[in-house]
Length: 281
Image 1 (cartoon, rainbow, N blue to C red):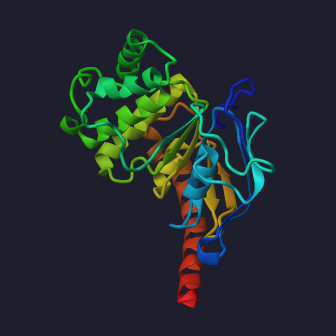
Image 2: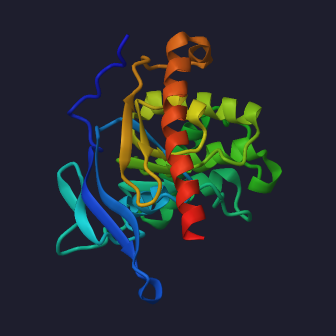
């Protein structure tokens, strides 16, 4: 059974068009992204996997506006974010990043953290921001955590609060860089279910980097396996398991087939990265 098609009427279609990124520390000219092209449909969960250090995060940061590109272009809903004439995208509320290291303010309550963005950006009044924050926290199963501080909550709850905070301004794209890397397997399982529930309500486009291949197949509409550095797509797997998904997916034959196919492709690139490292050393 094929996953439902993503509606073309939604916002959040990303096109990465022949992007090249070269870092030039001390004239070394390190090629990190090499003629990378990728289309992500509006409302799609695109999972990106590949060897450590291959350039996945560089690509994410280029979409966010934290890094420039050397050549090529990145567009969002047909609007050029970066490319010829503007090598670095402007940072904007339409693209929100959740990194693997948390960024909640420890001196603010969880509710204050969630409401902070719209208030500081003056897109909502204090009352509006707090009302929406309470509703978003309730939708994410976080009722009862509003007046606790981040240091008083578990790592899984903090991750969920960070994602709810990222969704407060209704971004077009959510950029996630290994958000569950430090979590234990049981907490990660709960977070997967929470993220899928949030996705069912928000349908926001996601560019999600992970090293967890089972996570990739469970969450994604498609999984992009990147080459070892320099980064470009080696294989794109369409995950033909319908949404909404639940833990029952983990026991299906198709899920195991997709995990195995992804693992084989990643291992090819990991071996190549190791061999290149040995030769360079």
